[in-house]
Length: 575
Ligand code: C2E
Ligand code: CA
Ligand code: CA
Figure 1 (cartoon, protein in one colour):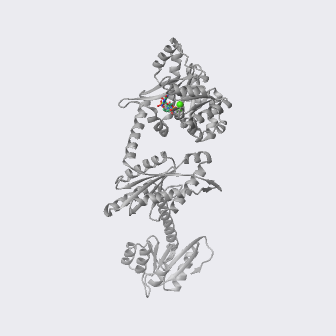
Figure 2 (cartoon, rainbow, N blue to C red):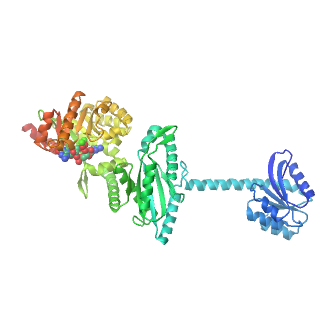
Figure 3 (cartoon, helix red, strand yellow):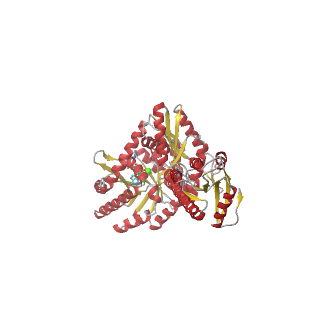
């Protein structure tokens, strides 16, 4: 190989030529054309094959007649190795037939040695054509890549995954093998994304991908479906237990923190497993069942593994039905608000009412909130549902007032999702304003676990509501974090002792002590205490003795529709 003199464009040339004089002739013409040429000359098949081992040639110029070789044979060798490498025959006179055959076999051009004026333009043209082909190929490759791989983690995406599962199933059908699909979802990833930013979120997704890969074999497929959902495809399993073992290993790998920007981040995950053939024999069905098993795992407490089962599949189908029906229910006025009065324990006077939603389903009858509120929360339907409840409760409140009843405060349950929704304080304010009712009649009930999901955001939103004049009550107190000291940082007015403690207060010393302690601490912090779920006189007496301010429960009144409540007020007045 020899370096040419300085020129503008560099050219790596493979020259098939036996005659050094002709070599010099060709090189001179090329250099004159402004190329900085690097070249190798060969004149037989072996040397040509050797030279083609390097693939950075840009063009081949070949003589036709050589003692040990000829142009057509050289052309076949070159094209069989790299059909995109431009090949130009530069020779003495060749017959027209040879020229036609050369072109037919893939040569780009042929020139006469005694007239090289077309040589440089031909090289330029071929280089530019080759560039174009390259750019096109690259664009096609990029497109193919983007269509099949996830941008953030470079893992196979949904489409490539479906293809791989399809192949695995076809293979397993013939061999009667087991295939498992694992659906892995990070616990509380949204929180990390929201608090630390998308950039950190993306880096975490990448690190998770690497961590998972370390725990898998080369032949297993790890894919990302988007969001924080990963899928692992395990094929050729000797028995079903293996998938569980792999899932356990994956779960364990999350015990170590992820290091992002030198910061340790701990995340857990939940994994659902679906098996072929037990849980389905179709790509989408398997993914769906693995996903619903994952949700089940999450519900059982995070950081968990769950195998798909018939019960889970039925429960998922029912949930799906509820979700669909619930969308209709909000629009078709199938929801009802019931009210349960709250009483002052010392004197039995009504102090307020709690709004509790129900669903008058056209075919299933009256459905209690526990059956549909969780679905509404999961799907986000709780936002319109919550606003509907508030509007109706406030309208009923006006109606009661107009009829001369004095229900006092109205307590509305807010789910965590509503608490964190930016529009909630504004929504509360506008509903009350539209009704011309003061904000001081409204009390919102929110659970401890709801607050603890994101204490900073909760604090900000609660403060905003508090400033508007709304009071704040902690519902189901005692079942969660239960640290009054911690809760002090929130603007709380009321503690609502959970009904599970009230239920056992007369015979469980531990519960009785806990209730007493909560009441004493609440008094010290100047919080109002209300006990819910009072069903017996005995429970009432215990709570009154402990100094509990208020009570609510079946003993006094069950939740009831507005009209019944109006009747209840009237009876009470007459009594
Ligand atoms: P919660 O806020 O703890 O409501 C108290 C539940 O206890 C109500 O159940 C009520 O009917 C029931 N209850 C009242 N007195 C007694 C009693 O003496 N004994 C027993 N065993 N239970 C009693 P409900 O109405 O089925 O509501 C269940 C849950 O659904 C509520 O629990 C609340 O978390 C949620 N919920 C209800 N309405 C709404 C709403 O409009 N929005 C939101 N986000 N959640 C709601
Ligand atoms: Ca409540
Ligand atoms: Ca409660």
